[in-house]
Length: 345
Image 1 (cartoon, rainbow, N blue to C red):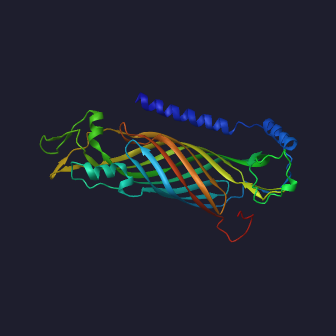
Image 2 (image 1 turned 90 degrees about the horizontal axis):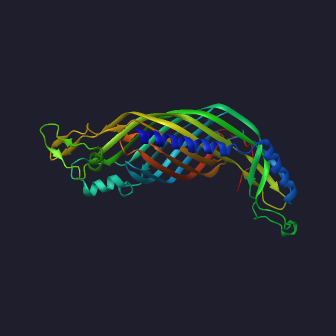
Image 3 (image 1 turned 135 degrees about the horizontal axis):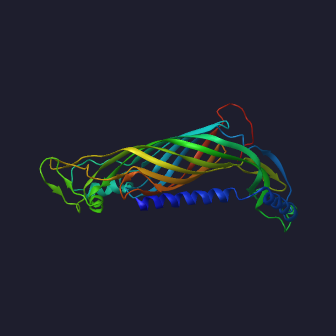
């Protein structure tokens, strides 16, 4: 239990350092950066719009690749997500992921080849739904980093002092959120090595037959739980026209979150061998966990997205740590037939 609390403390410290870094720029620093911009960069530009409050309402995401290294099971596959923003009040999402096939589900693939019991193994799957209340949602002047495109560059107007990286004054929308939701997942798992680590024996439900812990005792595990936590989001949505360059924008939506996870429902499928059921109730679980993650996407009709997550997921004892990476494409929609901005090509 002491090690578990240490893991929680490390995750909390990482989150706090991320929030401090995100909020590092104060008004004095922004003013100094803006003065440096006008004095060192011989590049004029026109702001076409600067509206971080004007977002797509619905984002539909497909991740053709996710990689999850989970102490219970490592998998590689695809995932999808729906994310809806309602004004400056709340947002909600639904997502799910699944391993490509048995060969990309490490525990299931190993069980199909080496299991010494009769259980039919399931493919890994994970589903989650969440809701975030915008406890604080405000827009203030800040800065945005923009890299002009040279596709339409006119060499006659470029001077040696022009830099290709701009930091321009821009409105920044900051959201402090209170979030919560539920999740469910299932996976194949090898109880042989885990039972040995936990120091328990898997015994037949009738009689005294005991399975060897060094055998490959594969079965199925499922869990349903809840999470509650907080998030820090920054949104920029500025579009400029640099003189001699193509129009360019910064419409990044960045989200940092920390959650406490609780799973009151965890089940192991009874092991069957040669027609004899074996009791798995001796296995110990960790019902509480935590996670920290960063997620980014762009306020466009078509863009890309990323998500990195680290944490301790409620699972079998000593099998809780995991890391997750997702990369995908996003389609954004305002859910109304009205053109209200510029289209990026």
